[in-house]
Structures are given as structure tokens and as C-alpha cells.
Image (cartoon, rainbow, N blue to C red; front, side, top):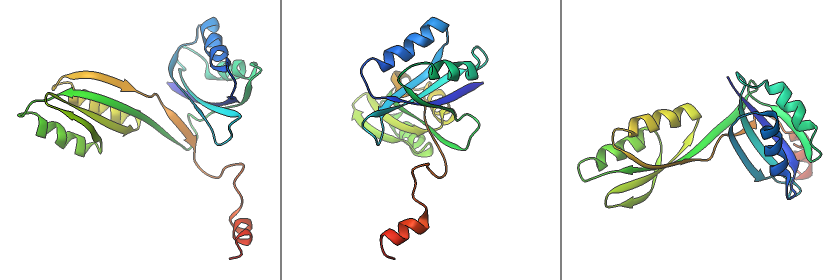
Length: 174
């Protein structure tokens, strides 16, 4: 089973290196890792996917907290959360197969972002299983290149920083 950890860290040079070094030292395998700034410029957010059949996610979480730059770690695997992956896929096409590929793009709610005489580049965002299924279907046409962002996740519901609706309404004098 894959575990999805959301980790908030200080946005400073070397933090990613410290985290990846922790995984290397402990022999943890990272299935995917995404890092980006947050609404607070002093904080970065990491979404780390680990294989819990090979690594206990609770131990990974405890080890992440031992790092100086770690602010918060949350396992969102079983929590209500929005989890998405992005893929760019370059597929071989010719005049005979192009329309079939474009129909598949529509079915999977993808987007064609580049067209060349012998290929198209498709952008697809969604759950990991959806993207895996789409890639499987495209294999018969020939995938020239493939890149994925890795999973990003955000817990559903009210944020700790969210202002209650009543207070917000009072602030705007409704």
C-alpha cells in the first residue's frame, strides 16, 4: 500500500537534500516526491509517496519530524483528500491514427498541448489510476516520451487558518 505524506518545511536551501538524505540513510524508497512553495513564502510543501509494504509510514513520519527544518507532517492516505498527478505524454501518430488518439484524449478528459506531423503531446491530470489506464491504452500507438509530476495532495475541508463564514460575512458588512 502506498502512503501519502504531506510535509511542510522551511523554505530554505538544503532542506530537500536533508530529506532525501534521510531516505537514503534509512533505505526508504520514495515512489514520488513533489515540492513547491506555499501561500507563505517561508514554507514549502512536500508530498511524499512511500510504499508502506516496504517501509512503515509512521516511522518515516517520526524521522521527518527529527529534521530541524520540518514544521508539520501529516499522513493523508486515509483522510478525505484531493490527490492528483499530471502527465505529459508524447504519442506517435499518423493521419490514420490521429483521430483515434484524439478521441481517447476526449474520453479521458485530457488536453492536446502540441501537434506535430508525426506526434501529439497530451496533458492529463487526475488520479493515478486514471493516468495509468490512459498510458496503458496509448501503448498500442507508441509512446515516444512520458513525464509525470508525481502525486500532490491536499486534505479536504476547512483549513486551520480559514475564517468562519459568520466572521467573514461581518468583515465585509453583509
